[in-house]
Length: 183
Length: 287
Image (cartoon, rainbow over all chains, first blue to last red; front, top):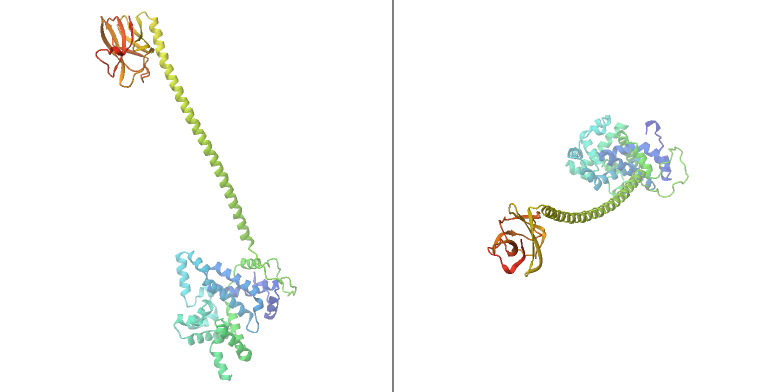
């Protein structure tokens, strides 16, 4: 789908159409958000085929549980993003994923394990973006773990050997940094 | 809640964890309560959400086009046109039907046909193999019986050749005037026996012809012995085997004898005897 064909609706319009199960809105929703959601998914799952499966599952779930979305609790994108992240993390821990690893040759496996264990920022995947360059490595590491690797903040604290409070603060600082960049 | 406490709450980082979905349901509920009571909290959450949304948009990755096709096929919405106008028509009021992808369906069908074809081929092959096996067995039987026939015929032919040779010789000898034929008749031991001996008048050689003899059967330990009676004394002319011996020659040359008044055959132990065993005198005939 080209950028020209992309259609945007305001969030309340989207939500209303989605909850009345209008099939047309799913197309719009897909063209608006699939790249952003796929960006999140493909950072968690590097295997392209599996990542695309998860993207599909994400939209199936968005479509099927649209009625459960409550706009007083947050933005539509936050809800969708959390569905995408949860499905990705589920996939990451599933048998499917472990089987797909078995089918890769050793070289791929080694690089995969490397990627899994990497907490520093990987510019190949994210692209060189100004906003990210502005983020301090400490903050980036924490955000990366929680946002992309499916770690809870407790797990991230263990992984980085930091106090829980520090992890929470760094997540907050990272997001404040992002907010400053966008405003 | 005081302004200081509210500030501390906002700064604790719990709202970020809320947006990231990293809180337990109870903790999330607390945040939602706080948000409903305090506009500051609500605004902060909205700002965090917007930041995360922007972050995601900045890091967007375009998925391959067929994911969308597969998604709409899976949801059974493939024929729906993209339409900005929101239509309130409840076309899809039911739960979305999950239908299997046509591609995989077709593949399964193809594989099923292939399987059926394989089984059919296997059955035909097995049947053909079975028929061929039976035919081969029948052919083997035929070959065996033909072999048996052939052996029989070969036996008959060799017997006929043997007899023919003997008869030829007999005829040749009867024609020639050199050969005297001595007929020997059965004696008390074997009255029905008979045999001929051919004696050459010129070189005095003696021949016997297996075709021209009918002697009582002997066992493995005994042989026939031909005698010539010379002036009342028996002279051995040699031994010979049974009429059905392996010897192919119908004619057998015995020892020559210068003069004789009579010939006789007795049954003697293998290798022959010095003197004839008179009670086993089978045939005798005078010159």
